[in-house]
Image (cartoon, one colour):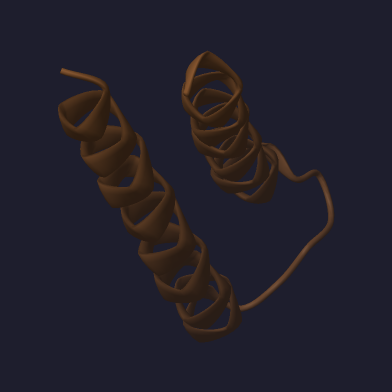
Length: 60
């Protein structure tokens, strides 16, 4: 189970890093394009966080 929790935690960190990279991007872009990508990224982060939560609960 620990491997599952570690993997879920890594997925959360990866998803957060993608969101941060998107916000930190130096490339010029329209806000609506940024926002569209951000929503997709935030949904992926949420999914990763739910997976981590469920893995933690199952381990208890």
